[in-house]
Length: 614
Image: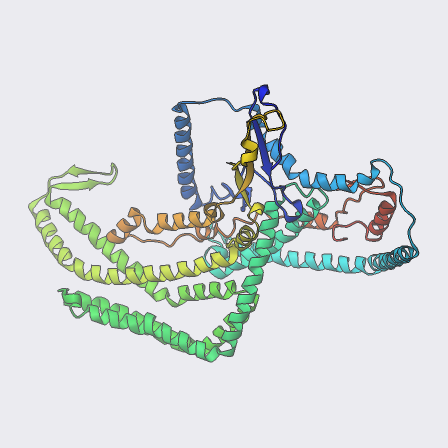
Protein backbone atom coordinates (compact mmCIF):
# COMPACT_ATOMS: atom_id res chain seq x y z
CA UNK A 1 0.00 0.00 0.00
CA UNK A 2 1.21 3.56 -0.59
CA UNK A 3 2.44 5.40 2.47
CA UNK A 4 2.02 9.12 3.09
CA UNK A 5 4.66 10.77 5.28
CA UNK A 6 2.69 13.24 7.41
CA UNK A 7 3.74 14.11 10.97
CA UNK A 8 1.25 13.43 13.71
CA UNK A 9 1.64 16.98 15.05
CA UNK A 10 -0.15 18.29 11.96
CA UNK A 11 -3.45 17.24 13.55
CA UNK A 12 -4.94 15.72 10.38
CA UNK A 13 -6.26 12.26 9.53
CA UNK A 14 -5.03 10.91 6.21
CA UNK A 15 -7.25 8.97 3.81
CA UNK A 16 -5.65 7.14 0.90
CA UNK A 17 -8.07 5.97 -1.78
CA UNK A 18 -6.75 3.22 -4.04
CA UNK A 19 -8.31 1.73 -7.15
CA UNK A 20 -7.60 -0.74 -9.91
CA UNK A 21 -6.94 1.25 -13.05
CA UNK A 22 -9.69 0.60 -15.67
CA UNK A 23 -8.39 -0.76 -18.95
CA UNK A 24 -10.10 1.11 -21.84
CA UNK A 25 -8.96 -1.53 -24.34
CA UNK A 26 -11.14 -4.01 -22.47
CA UNK A 27 -13.92 -1.38 -22.18
CA UNK A 28 -13.61 -1.16 -18.39
CA UNK A 29 -14.77 2.03 -16.71
CA UNK A 30 -16.22 3.38 -13.47
CA UNK A 31 -19.62 5.04 -13.32
CA UNK A 32 -22.04 6.14 -10.61
CA UNK A 33 -25.05 5.41 -12.84
CA UNK A 34 -25.87 1.86 -14.00
CA UNK A 35 -25.31 1.11 -17.65
CA UNK A 36 -28.50 1.06 -19.74
CA UNK A 37 -29.04 -1.97 -21.97
CA UNK A 38 -32.14 -0.52 -23.71
CA UNK A 39 -32.53 2.60 -25.80
CA UNK A 40 -33.61 5.76 -24.06
CA UNK A 41 -36.19 6.69 -26.72
CA UNK A 42 -38.34 3.68 -25.82
CA UNK A 43 -39.72 5.44 -22.75
CA UNK A 44 -43.21 6.60 -23.63
CA UNK A 45 -42.73 5.79 -27.30
CA UNK A 46 -46.08 3.98 -27.55
CA UNK A 47 -48.00 5.96 -24.97
CA UNK A 48 -50.64 7.04 -27.48
CA UNK A 49 -51.16 3.59 -29.02
CA UNK A 50 -53.76 1.40 -27.30
CA UNK A 51 -53.49 -0.70 -25.26
CA UNK A 52 -50.12 0.78 -24.30
CA UNK A 53 -51.78 3.94 -23.07
CA UNK A 54 -53.54 2.39 -20.06
CA UNK A 55 -50.58 0.33 -18.87
CA UNK A 56 -48.11 3.17 -19.40
CA UNK A 57 -50.39 5.60 -17.56
CA UNK A 58 -50.67 3.23 -14.60
CA UNK A 59 -46.90 2.71 -14.52
CA UNK A 60 -46.30 6.45 -14.75
CA UNK A 61 -48.73 7.12 -11.91
CA UNK A 62 -47.00 4.46 -9.80
CA UNK A 63 -43.57 6.00 -10.50
CA UNK A 64 -44.82 9.45 -9.50
CA UNK A 65 -46.34 8.06 -6.31
CA UNK A 66 -43.05 6.41 -5.33
CA UNK A 67 -41.15 9.61 -6.14
CA UNK A 68 -43.46 11.60 -3.84
CA UNK A 69 -42.93 9.07 -1.05
CA UNK A 70 -39.16 9.40 -1.44
CA UNK A 71 -39.41 13.20 -1.23
CA UNK A 72 -41.52 12.91 1.92
CA UNK A 73 -38.98 10.57 3.49
CA UNK A 74 -36.25 13.15 2.86
CA UNK A 75 -38.25 15.69 4.89
CA UNK A 76 -38.26 13.34 7.89
CA UNK A 77 -34.51 12.74 7.87
CA UNK A 78 -32.97 13.45 11.27
CA UNK A 79 -29.54 14.52 10.02
CA UNK A 80 -29.27 16.27 6.67
CA UNK A 81 -26.55 18.30 5.02
CA UNK A 82 -25.95 19.76 1.58
CA UNK A 83 -23.64 17.90 -0.76
CA UNK A 84 -20.01 18.82 -0.28
CA UNK A 85 -17.64 19.89 -3.02
CA UNK A 86 -15.99 16.46 -2.93
CA UNK A 87 -19.32 14.73 -3.50
CA UNK A 88 -20.13 17.09 -6.37
CA UNK A 89 -16.71 16.45 -7.93
CA UNK A 90 -17.08 12.66 -7.84
CA UNK A 91 -18.20 12.32 -11.52
CA UNK A 92 -15.22 14.42 -12.66
CA UNK A 93 -12.86 12.34 -10.55
CA UNK A 94 -14.26 9.11 -11.99
CA UNK A 95 -13.82 10.51 -15.49
CA UNK A 96 -10.18 11.27 -14.72
CA UNK A 97 -9.72 7.75 -13.36
CA UNK A 98 -11.21 6.31 -16.55
CA UNK A 99 -8.71 8.34 -18.61
CA UNK A 100 -5.72 7.42 -16.46
CA UNK A 101 -4.72 4.39 -18.54
CA UNK A 102 -4.67 6.35 -21.80
CA UNK A 103 -2.81 9.21 -20.16
CA UNK A 104 -0.22 6.73 -18.96
CA UNK A 105 0.15 5.30 -22.49
CA UNK A 106 0.42 8.82 -23.91
CA UNK A 107 3.16 9.77 -21.48
CA UNK A 108 5.03 6.51 -22.09
CA UNK A 109 4.88 6.97 -25.87
CA UNK A 110 6.19 10.55 -25.63
CA UNK A 111 8.87 9.85 -23.03
CA UNK A 112 11.56 10.05 -25.73
CA UNK A 113 10.75 13.72 -26.23
CA UNK A 114 11.80 14.54 -22.69
CA UNK A 115 15.49 15.37 -22.89
CA UNK A 116 17.98 13.72 -25.21
CA UNK A 117 19.50 10.31 -24.90
CA UNK A 118 22.58 9.21 -26.73
CA UNK A 119 22.07 6.09 -28.73
CA UNK A 120 24.83 3.58 -29.19
CA UNK A 121 25.89 2.54 -32.67
CA UNK A 122 24.04 -0.47 -34.01
CA UNK A 123 25.93 -3.61 -34.81
CA UNK A 124 25.96 -5.22 -38.24
CA UNK A 125 23.38 -7.82 -37.21
CA UNK A 126 21.02 -5.14 -35.89
CA UNK A 127 21.41 -3.13 -39.12
CA UNK A 128 20.62 -6.18 -41.24
CA UNK A 129 17.55 -6.95 -39.11
CA UNK A 130 16.36 -3.34 -39.29
CA UNK A 131 16.85 -3.26 -43.08
CA UNK A 132 14.91 -6.51 -43.49
CA UNK A 133 12.08 -5.23 -41.30
CA UNK A 134 11.97 -1.96 -43.23
CA UNK A 135 11.89 -3.85 -46.54
CA UNK A 136 9.10 -6.08 -45.30
CA UNK A 137 7.06 -3.09 -44.08
CA UNK A 138 7.66 -1.28 -47.36
CA UNK A 139 6.51 -4.25 -49.46
CA UNK A 140 3.39 -4.83 -47.35
CA UNK A 141 2.59 -1.11 -47.45
CA UNK A 142 2.93 -0.99 -51.26
CA UNK A 143 0.75 -4.10 -51.66
CA UNK A 144 -1.89 -2.64 -49.35
CA UNK A 145 -1.82 0.68 -51.20
CA UNK A 146 -2.20 -1.12 -54.55
CA UNK A 147 -5.13 -3.13 -53.22
CA UNK A 148 -6.83 -0.04 -51.73
CA UNK A 149 -6.25 1.97 -54.91
CA UNK A 150 -7.25 -0.58 -57.57
CA UNK A 151 -9.53 -3.25 -56.07
CA UNK A 152 -11.08 -1.99 -52.84
CA UNK A 153 -13.00 1.03 -54.27
CA UNK A 154 -14.86 -1.22 -56.74
CA UNK A 155 -15.65 -3.82 -54.09
CA UNK A 156 -16.78 -1.21 -51.59
CA UNK A 157 -19.05 0.51 -54.11
CA UNK A 158 -20.63 -2.82 -55.08
CA UNK A 159 -21.18 -3.56 -51.40
CA UNK A 160 -22.85 -0.17 -50.87
CA UNK A 161 -25.17 -0.63 -53.84
CA UNK A 162 -26.07 -4.14 -52.70
CA UNK A 163 -26.74 -2.88 -49.18
CA UNK A 164 -28.94 -0.05 -50.48
CA UNK A 165 -30.88 -2.45 -52.72
CA UNK A 166 -31.59 -4.80 -49.82
CA UNK A 167 -32.55 -1.82 -47.67
CA UNK A 168 -35.11 -0.68 -50.25
CA UNK A 169 -36.61 -4.19 -50.34
CA UNK A 170 -36.65 -4.28 -46.52
CA UNK A 171 -38.34 -0.88 -46.40
CA UNK A 172 -41.06 -2.10 -48.78
CA UNK A 173 -41.66 -5.22 -46.68
CA UNK A 174 -41.80 -3.15 -43.49
CA UNK A 175 -44.36 -0.85 -45.07
CA UNK A 176 -46.45 -3.87 -46.10
CA UNK A 177 -46.29 -5.40 -42.61
CA UNK A 178 -47.28 -2.10 -41.02
CA UNK A 179 -49.98 -1.20 -43.57
CA UNK A 180 -53.40 -0.70 -42.00
CA UNK A 181 -56.37 -1.07 -44.37
CA UNK A 182 -59.10 1.55 -43.95
CA UNK A 183 -60.98 2.22 -41.82
CA UNK A 184 -58.36 1.92 -39.04
CA UNK A 185 -57.99 -1.84 -39.18
CA UNK A 186 -55.12 -3.69 -37.54
CA UNK A 187 -51.82 -4.23 -39.31
CA UNK A 188 -50.60 -7.66 -40.34
CA UNK A 189 -47.80 -7.64 -37.75
CA UNK A 190 -50.36 -7.04 -34.97
CA UNK A 191 -52.27 -10.28 -35.65
CA UNK A 192 -49.54 -12.63 -36.90
CA UNK A 193 -46.51 -13.83 -34.97
CA UNK A 194 -44.70 -14.60 -38.24
CA UNK A 195 -45.22 -11.07 -39.54
CA UNK A 196 -44.07 -9.69 -36.19
CA UNK A 197 -40.90 -11.79 -36.31
CA UNK A 198 -40.15 -10.64 -39.86
CA UNK A 199 -40.68 -7.05 -38.76
CA UNK A 200 -38.16 -7.46 -35.91
CA UNK A 201 -35.51 -8.99 -38.15
CA UNK A 202 -35.96 -6.35 -40.86
CA UNK A 203 -35.74 -3.52 -38.34
CA UNK A 204 -32.57 -5.05 -36.92
CA UNK A 205 -31.10 -5.18 -40.42
CA UNK A 206 -31.99 -1.50 -40.93
CA UNK A 207 -30.42 -0.52 -37.60
CA UNK A 208 -27.12 -2.45 -37.85
CA UNK A 209 -25.36 -0.04 -40.28
CA UNK A 210 -26.11 2.92 -38.00
CA UNK A 211 -24.84 0.97 -34.98
CA UNK A 212 -21.67 -0.03 -36.78
CA UNK A 213 -21.10 3.54 -37.94
CA UNK A 214 -21.46 4.76 -34.35
CA UNK A 215 -18.87 2.27 -33.15
CA UNK A 216 -16.52 3.26 -36.00
CA UNK A 217 -16.87 6.92 -35.06
CA UNK A 218 -15.94 6.23 -31.45
CA UNK A 219 -12.78 4.40 -32.55
CA UNK A 220 -11.35 7.80 -33.57
CA UNK A 221 -11.95 9.20 -30.10
CA UNK A 222 -10.62 8.38 -26.66
CA UNK A 223 -11.22 4.74 -25.80
CA UNK A 224 -12.03 5.71 -22.23
CA UNK A 225 -15.24 7.48 -23.26
CA UNK A 226 -18.11 5.27 -22.09
CA UNK A 227 -20.90 6.75 -24.20
CA UNK A 228 -20.64 4.04 -26.87
CA UNK A 229 -20.31 1.06 -24.53
CA UNK A 230 -24.08 0.39 -24.27
CA UNK A 231 -24.32 0.63 -28.06
CA UNK A 232 -21.44 -1.83 -28.35
CA UNK A 233 -23.21 -4.29 -26.04
CA UNK A 234 -26.54 -3.93 -27.87
CA UNK A 235 -24.89 -4.37 -31.27
CA UNK A 236 -22.96 -7.51 -30.46
CA UNK A 237 -25.77 -8.92 -28.33
CA UNK A 238 -28.12 -8.72 -31.31
CA UNK A 239 -25.51 -10.27 -33.62
CA UNK A 240 -24.87 -13.07 -31.14
CA UNK A 241 -28.59 -13.75 -30.70
CA UNK A 242 -29.13 -13.86 -34.46
CA UNK A 243 -26.17 -16.23 -34.85
CA UNK A 244 -27.48 -18.53 -32.11
CA UNK A 245 -30.95 -18.33 -33.63
CA UNK A 246 -29.61 -19.42 -37.03
CA UNK A 247 -27.52 -22.24 -35.51
CA UNK A 248 -30.48 -23.61 -33.54
CA UNK A 249 -32.72 -23.16 -36.59
CA UNK A 250 -30.35 -25.12 -38.85
CA UNK A 251 -30.26 -28.00 -36.35
CA UNK A 252 -34.04 -27.94 -35.98
CA UNK A 253 -34.64 -27.59 -39.70
CA UNK A 254 -32.32 -30.47 -40.60
CA UNK A 255 -34.24 -32.77 -38.25
CA UNK A 256 -37.62 -31.65 -39.59
CA UNK A 257 -36.59 -32.02 -43.24
CA UNK A 258 -35.08 -35.46 -42.70
CA UNK A 259 -38.17 -36.69 -40.82
CA UNK A 260 -40.87 -34.67 -42.56
CA UNK A 261 -43.30 -37.59 -42.96
CA UNK A 262 -42.87 -38.72 -39.36
CA UNK A 263 -43.35 -35.17 -38.05
CA UNK A 264 -46.43 -34.74 -40.28
CA UNK A 265 -47.99 -37.94 -38.86
CA UNK A 266 -47.26 -36.85 -35.30
CA UNK A 267 -48.76 -33.41 -35.90
CA UNK A 268 -51.83 -35.00 -37.49
CA UNK A 269 -52.21 -37.33 -34.50
CA UNK A 270 -51.92 -34.46 -32.02
CA UNK A 271 -54.47 -32.35 -33.91
CA UNK A 272 -56.99 -35.20 -34.11
CA UNK A 273 -56.46 -36.30 -30.52
CA UNK A 274 -56.85 -32.93 -28.81
CA UNK A 275 -58.81 -30.63 -31.12
CA UNK A 276 -61.26 -33.04 -32.77
CA UNK A 277 -61.62 -36.47 -31.18
CA UNK A 278 -60.87 -35.30 -27.66
CA UNK A 279 -63.34 -32.43 -28.01
CA UNK A 280 -65.99 -34.81 -29.34
CA UNK A 281 -65.52 -37.16 -26.38
CA UNK A 282 -65.72 -34.24 -23.95
CA UNK A 283 -68.97 -32.92 -25.47
CA UNK A 284 -70.49 -36.41 -25.51
CA UNK A 285 -69.54 -36.84 -21.84
CA UNK A 286 -71.28 -33.55 -20.98
CA UNK A 287 -74.61 -34.94 -22.22
CA UNK A 288 -74.49 -37.90 -19.83
CA UNK A 289 -74.53 -36.49 -16.27
CA UNK A 290 -70.93 -35.22 -16.10
CA UNK A 291 -69.39 -35.66 -12.63
CA UNK A 292 -72.83 -36.59 -11.29
CA UNK A 293 -74.41 -33.24 -12.22
CA UNK A 294 -78.08 -33.29 -13.17
CA UNK A 295 -78.32 -31.24 -16.36
CA UNK A 296 -81.23 -30.53 -18.64
CA UNK A 297 -81.14 -33.38 -21.14
CA UNK A 298 -82.93 -31.59 -23.96
CA UNK A 299 -80.80 -28.43 -23.80
CA UNK A 300 -77.59 -30.42 -23.33
CA UNK A 301 -78.44 -32.64 -26.34
CA UNK A 302 -79.27 -29.57 -28.44
CA UNK A 303 -76.01 -27.80 -27.61
CA UNK A 304 -74.01 -31.00 -28.04
CA UNK A 305 -75.54 -31.70 -31.46
CA UNK A 306 -74.82 -28.12 -32.53
CA UNK A 307 -71.17 -28.24 -31.47
CA UNK A 308 -70.64 -31.77 -32.79
CA UNK A 309 -72.07 -30.77 -36.16
CA UNK A 310 -69.56 -27.89 -36.38
CA UNK A 311 -66.73 -30.24 -35.34
CA UNK A 312 -67.71 -32.77 -38.01
CA UNK A 313 -67.70 -30.04 -40.64
CA UNK A 314 -64.31 -28.83 -39.38
CA UNK A 315 -62.98 -32.41 -39.44
CA UNK A 316 -64.10 -32.79 -43.05
CA UNK A 317 -62.29 -29.59 -44.00
CA UNK A 318 -59.13 -30.78 -42.25
CA UNK A 319 -59.29 -34.12 -44.10
CA UNK A 320 -59.26 -32.29 -47.41
CA UNK A 321 -56.19 -30.31 -46.32
CA UNK A 322 -54.44 -33.30 -44.74
CA UNK A 323 -52.45 -34.24 -47.92
CA UNK A 324 -50.86 -30.78 -47.77
CA UNK A 325 -49.58 -31.30 -44.22
CA UNK A 326 -46.18 -32.84 -45.23
CA UNK A 327 -45.55 -29.88 -47.54
CA UNK A 328 -46.39 -27.48 -44.70
CA UNK A 329 -43.96 -29.33 -42.44
CA UNK A 330 -41.24 -29.09 -45.10
CA UNK A 331 -41.96 -25.39 -45.48
CA UNK A 332 -41.51 -24.94 -41.74
CA UNK A 333 -38.25 -26.92 -41.96
CA UNK A 334 -36.98 -24.70 -44.76
CA UNK A 335 -37.90 -21.58 -42.79
CA UNK A 336 -35.73 -22.88 -39.95
CA UNK A 337 -32.67 -22.08 -42.06
CA UNK A 338 -33.42 -18.40 -41.36
CA UNK A 339 -33.46 -19.03 -37.60
CA UNK A 340 -35.43 -21.01 -35.04
CA UNK A 341 -37.62 -18.00 -34.28
CA UNK A 342 -39.33 -18.14 -37.69
CA UNK A 343 -40.66 -21.74 -37.39
CA UNK A 344 -41.74 -21.03 -33.82
CA UNK A 345 -43.77 -18.03 -35.01
CA UNK A 346 -45.20 -20.15 -37.84
CA UNK A 347 -46.24 -22.82 -35.32
CA UNK A 348 -47.89 -20.10 -33.20
CA UNK A 349 -49.92 -18.92 -36.20
CA UNK A 350 -50.82 -22.51 -37.11
CA UNK A 351 -52.07 -23.12 -33.56
CA UNK A 352 -54.34 -20.08 -33.95
CA UNK A 353 -55.68 -21.34 -37.29
CA UNK A 354 -56.14 -24.99 -36.28
CA UNK A 355 -58.01 -24.05 -33.08
CA UNK A 356 -60.29 -21.54 -34.75
CA UNK A 357 -63.35 -23.74 -34.07
CA UNK A 358 -62.54 -23.84 -30.34
CA UNK A 359 -62.30 -20.05 -30.35
CA UNK A 360 -65.71 -19.79 -32.02
CA UNK A 361 -67.18 -22.26 -29.47
CA UNK A 362 -65.81 -20.13 -26.66
CA UNK A 363 -67.27 -16.94 -28.12
CA UNK A 364 -70.71 -18.52 -28.69
CA UNK A 365 -70.95 -20.21 -25.26
CA UNK A 366 -69.66 -17.09 -23.48
CA UNK A 367 -72.22 -14.92 -25.25
CA UNK A 368 -75.11 -17.29 -24.38
CA UNK A 369 -73.95 -17.61 -20.77
CA UNK A 370 -73.53 -13.84 -20.39
CA UNK A 371 -76.98 -13.10 -21.85
CA UNK A 372 -78.64 -15.71 -19.64
CA UNK A 373 -76.87 -14.45 -16.53
CA UNK A 374 -77.83 -10.83 -17.33
CA UNK A 375 -81.50 -11.78 -17.77
CA UNK A 376 -81.51 -13.74 -14.48
CA UNK A 377 -80.08 -10.73 -12.62
CA UNK A 378 -82.72 -8.44 -14.16
CA UNK A 379 -85.53 -10.84 -13.19
CA UNK A 380 -84.08 -11.03 -9.68
CA UNK A 381 -84.48 -7.26 -9.42
CA UNK A 382 -88.10 -7.72 -10.54
CA UNK A 383 -88.82 -9.89 -7.46
CA UNK A 384 -87.51 -7.10 -5.25
CA UNK A 385 -89.68 -4.51 -6.95
CA UNK A 386 -86.71 -2.74 -8.52
CA UNK A 387 -85.21 -2.20 -11.92
CA UNK A 388 -81.91 -0.97 -13.28
CA UNK A 389 -81.74 2.62 -14.52
CA UNK A 390 -79.36 2.48 -17.47
CA UNK A 391 -79.17 6.25 -17.92
CA UNK A 392 -78.06 6.93 -14.33
CA UNK A 393 -76.40 3.53 -13.75
CA UNK A 394 -78.27 2.73 -10.55
CA UNK A 395 -81.09 0.57 -9.14
CA UNK A 396 -84.47 2.36 -8.80
CA UNK A 397 -87.79 1.27 -7.30
CA UNK A 398 -90.51 0.16 -9.69
CA UNK A 399 -94.13 -1.07 -9.36
CA UNK A 400 -94.98 -4.15 -11.44
CA UNK A 401 -98.35 -5.60 -12.36
CA UNK A 402 -99.41 -9.10 -11.39
CA UNK A 403 -99.01 -10.34 -14.97
CA UNK A 404 -95.48 -8.98 -15.11
CA UNK A 405 -94.55 -10.65 -11.82
CA UNK A 406 -96.07 -13.97 -12.96
CA UNK A 407 -94.25 -13.90 -16.32
CA UNK A 408 -91.02 -12.88 -14.60
CA UNK A 409 -91.35 -15.78 -12.13
CA UNK A 410 -91.82 -18.29 -14.94
CA UNK A 411 -88.88 -16.94 -16.94
CA UNK A 412 -86.65 -16.73 -13.87
CA UNK A 413 -87.40 -20.34 -12.89
CA UNK A 414 -86.81 -21.56 -16.44
CA UNK A 415 -83.54 -19.72 -16.96
CA UNK A 416 -82.24 -20.48 -13.47
CA UNK A 417 -82.60 -24.24 -13.89
CA UNK A 418 -81.12 -24.10 -17.40
CA UNK A 419 -78.10 -22.07 -16.23
CA UNK A 420 -76.01 -25.07 -14.98
CA UNK A 421 -76.25 -26.75 -18.38
CA UNK A 422 -75.04 -23.65 -20.22
CA UNK A 423 -72.40 -22.99 -17.53
CA UNK A 424 -70.90 -26.49 -17.96
CA UNK A 425 -70.47 -26.03 -21.72
CA UNK A 426 -69.10 -22.52 -21.18
CA UNK A 427 -66.58 -23.71 -18.57
CA UNK A 428 -65.38 -26.44 -20.92
CA UNK A 429 -64.69 -24.14 -23.84
CA UNK A 430 -63.31 -21.39 -21.60
CA UNK A 431 -60.80 -23.84 -20.14
CA UNK A 432 -59.80 -24.99 -23.62
CA UNK A 433 -59.37 -21.35 -24.68
CA UNK A 434 -57.18 -20.57 -21.66
CA UNK A 435 -55.02 -23.63 -22.44
CA UNK A 436 -54.49 -22.40 -26.01
CA UNK A 437 -53.59 -18.92 -24.73
CA UNK A 438 -51.08 -20.49 -22.31
CA UNK A 439 -49.52 -22.48 -25.18
CA UNK A 440 -49.18 -19.39 -27.35
CA UNK A 441 -47.77 -17.43 -24.39
CA UNK A 442 -45.11 -20.13 -23.95
CA UNK A 443 -44.20 -19.88 -27.65
CA UNK A 444 -44.05 -16.08 -27.46
CA UNK A 445 -41.85 -16.31 -24.37
CA UNK A 446 -39.49 -18.58 -26.31
CA UNK A 447 -39.43 -16.02 -29.10
CA UNK A 448 -38.66 -13.28 -26.58
CA UNK A 449 -35.67 -15.27 -25.30
CA UNK A 450 -34.36 -15.84 -28.83
CA UNK A 451 -34.76 -12.18 -29.81
CA UNK A 452 -33.90 -10.26 -26.66
CA UNK A 453 -32.17 -12.45 -24.08
CA UNK A 454 -29.15 -10.46 -22.71
CA UNK A 455 -26.72 -13.26 -23.45
CA UNK A 456 -23.79 -11.01 -24.37
CA UNK A 457 -24.28 -8.90 -21.23
CA UNK A 458 -24.34 -12.01 -19.04
CA UNK A 459 -21.15 -13.33 -20.63
CA UNK A 460 -19.48 -9.96 -20.05
CA UNK A 461 -20.60 -10.05 -16.43
CA UNK A 462 -19.11 -13.52 -15.95
CA UNK A 463 -15.93 -12.71 -17.84
CA UNK A 464 -15.30 -9.17 -16.55
CA UNK A 465 -17.94 -7.49 -14.39
CA UNK A 466 -16.12 -4.13 -14.65
CA UNK A 467 -17.43 -3.82 -18.20
CA UNK A 468 -21.00 -3.67 -16.84
CA UNK A 469 -20.83 -1.06 -14.07
CA UNK A 470 -23.83 -0.57 -11.83
CA UNK A 471 -22.25 2.03 -9.53
CA UNK A 472 -19.26 2.41 -7.24
CA UNK A 473 -18.56 1.64 -3.61
CA UNK A 474 -15.87 2.60 -1.10
CA UNK A 475 -14.53 -0.30 0.95
CA UNK A 476 -12.37 0.22 4.04
CA UNK A 477 -9.24 -1.91 3.84
CA UNK A 478 -7.44 -3.71 6.64
CA UNK A 479 -4.43 -1.48 7.30
CA UNK A 480 -1.17 -3.32 8.05
CA UNK A 481 0.06 -3.11 11.63
CA UNK A 482 3.22 -1.36 10.52
CA UNK A 483 1.20 1.54 9.12
CA UNK A 484 -0.95 1.75 12.25
CA UNK A 485 2.02 2.21 14.55
CA UNK A 486 2.06 5.94 15.30
CA UNK A 487 4.71 5.72 18.02
CA UNK A 488 8.29 6.78 17.56
CA UNK A 489 10.60 4.10 16.29
CA UNK A 490 13.75 3.01 17.99
CA UNK A 491 15.94 5.32 15.92
CA UNK A 492 13.89 8.36 16.91
CA UNK A 493 11.83 8.72 13.74
CA UNK A 494 8.90 11.09 13.87
CA UNK A 495 5.44 9.63 14.50
CA UNK A 496 3.08 9.64 11.53
CA UNK A 497 -0.52 10.82 11.37
CA UNK A 498 -3.20 8.11 11.44
CA UNK A 499 -3.96 6.91 7.93
CA UNK A 500 -6.96 4.97 6.61
CA UNK A 501 -6.92 3.09 3.31
CA UNK A 502 -10.08 2.97 1.21
CA UNK A 503 -10.58 0.85 -1.89
CA UNK A 504 -12.68 2.27 -4.73
CA UNK A 505 -14.47 -0.63 -6.43
CA UNK A 506 -16.94 -0.95 -9.26
CA UNK A 507 -20.33 -2.48 -8.47
CA UNK A 508 -21.46 -4.84 -11.25
CA UNK A 509 -24.86 -4.30 -12.82
CA UNK A 510 -27.47 -6.20 -10.76
CA UNK A 511 -29.28 -9.07 -12.44
CA UNK A 512 -32.58 -7.40 -11.56
CA UNK A 513 -31.69 -4.50 -13.86
CA UNK A 514 -30.29 -6.82 -16.52
CA UNK A 515 -33.64 -8.63 -16.70
CA UNK A 516 -35.78 -5.57 -15.96
CA UNK A 517 -37.52 -5.87 -19.34
CA UNK A 518 -38.54 -9.43 -18.51
CA UNK A 519 -39.85 -8.26 -15.15
CA UNK A 520 -41.93 -5.64 -16.96
CA UNK A 521 -43.26 -8.28 -19.37
CA UNK A 522 -44.15 -10.55 -16.45
CA UNK A 523 -45.90 -7.67 -14.75
CA UNK A 524 -47.98 -6.99 -17.86
CA UNK A 525 -48.90 -10.65 -18.27
CA UNK A 526 -49.85 -10.88 -14.60
CA UNK A 527 -51.79 -7.62 -14.85
CA UNK A 528 -53.72 -8.91 -17.84
CA UNK A 529 -54.43 -12.55 -16.93
CA UNK A 530 -54.12 -12.86 -13.13
CA UNK A 531 -56.08 -9.78 -12.12
CA UNK A 532 -59.48 -9.75 -10.35
CA UNK A 533 -60.96 -8.13 -13.46
CA UNK A 534 -60.10 -11.18 -15.59
CA UNK A 535 -61.54 -13.52 -12.95
CA UNK A 536 -64.74 -11.47 -12.88
CA UNK A 537 -64.92 -11.60 -16.69
CA UNK A 538 -64.61 -15.39 -16.63
CA UNK A 539 -67.32 -15.75 -14.00
CA UNK A 540 -69.71 -13.33 -15.71
CA UNK A 541 -69.11 -14.71 -19.21
CA UNK A 542 -67.46 -11.62 -20.63
CA UNK A 543 -64.86 -12.00 -23.36
CA UNK A 544 -61.24 -12.27 -22.15
CA UNK A 545 -59.05 -11.18 -25.06
CA UNK A 546 -55.40 -12.26 -25.27
CA UNK A 547 -52.80 -9.65 -24.47
CA UNK A 548 -52.16 -7.33 -27.38
CA UNK A 549 -49.16 -8.27 -29.49
CA UNK A 550 -47.69 -4.77 -29.07
CA UNK A 551 -47.68 -5.20 -25.32
CA UNK A 552 -46.17 -8.67 -25.60
CA UNK A 553 -43.48 -7.70 -28.11
CA UNK A 554 -42.49 -4.40 -26.49
CA UNK A 555 -39.67 -6.34 -24.81
CA UNK A 556 -38.21 -7.39 -28.14
CA UNK A 557 -38.38 -3.85 -29.56
CA UNK A 558 -36.54 -2.31 -26.59
CA UNK A 559 -33.18 -2.52 -28.39
CA UNK A 560 -34.50 -0.92 -31.59
CA UNK A 561 -35.13 2.80 -32.18
CA UNK A 562 -38.68 4.04 -32.58
CA UNK A 563 -37.79 5.92 -35.77
CA UNK A 564 -35.44 3.92 -37.97
CA UNK A 565 -32.92 5.63 -40.20
CA UNK A 566 -34.28 6.57 -43.63
CA UNK A 567 -32.85 5.41 -46.95
CA UNK A 568 -31.43 8.85 -47.77
CA UNK A 569 -29.83 9.11 -44.33
CA UNK A 570 -28.30 5.66 -44.77
CA UNK A 571 -26.88 6.70 -48.15
CA UNK A 572 -25.31 9.82 -46.65
CA UNK A 573 -24.00 7.75 -43.73
CA UNK A 574 -22.28 5.26 -46.01
CA UNK A 575 -20.84 7.95 -48.31
CA UNK A 576 -19.54 10.17 -45.50
CA UNK A 577 -15.74 10.20 -45.65
CA UNK A 578 -13.81 9.29 -42.57
CA UNK A 579 -11.95 12.07 -40.83
CA UNK A 580 -8.21 11.82 -41.47
CA UNK A 581 -5.65 13.40 -39.17
CA UNK A 582 -3.35 15.93 -40.78
CA UNK A 583 0.42 15.98 -40.36
CA UNK A 584 1.50 16.67 -36.84
CA UNK A 585 -2.04 16.12 -35.52
CA UNK A 586 -2.90 14.08 -32.48
CA UNK A 587 -4.41 10.69 -33.27
CA UNK A 588 -6.44 9.63 -30.28
CA UNK A 589 -4.42 11.95 -28.08
CA UNK A 590 -1.05 10.61 -29.26
CA UNK A 591 1.45 12.72 -31.15
CA UNK A 592 1.96 11.40 -34.67
CA UNK A 593 5.34 11.74 -36.30
CA UNK A 594 5.83 13.28 -39.74
CA UNK A 595 6.79 10.05 -41.47
CA UNK A 596 3.88 8.20 -39.95
CA UNK A 597 1.55 11.03 -40.92
CA UNK A 598 2.67 10.98 -44.57
CA UNK A 599 2.20 7.25 -44.76
CA UNK A 600 -1.23 7.58 -43.16
CA UNK A 601 -2.20 10.36 -45.58
CA UNK A 602 -1.09 8.21 -48.51
CA UNK A 603 -3.23 5.30 -47.33
CA UNK A 604 -6.19 7.56 -46.68
CA UNK A 605 -5.91 9.13 -50.13
CA UNK A 606 -5.72 5.73 -51.75
CA UNK A 607 -8.89 4.57 -50.03
CA UNK A 608 -10.74 7.89 -50.51
CA UNK A 609 -11.08 8.22 -46.75
CA UNK A 610 -14.41 6.42 -46.37
CA UNK A 611 -15.49 4.75 -43.15
CA UNK A 612 -14.97 1.25 -44.46
CA UNK A 613 -11.28 1.97 -45.10
CA UNK A 614 -9.12 0.59 -42.33
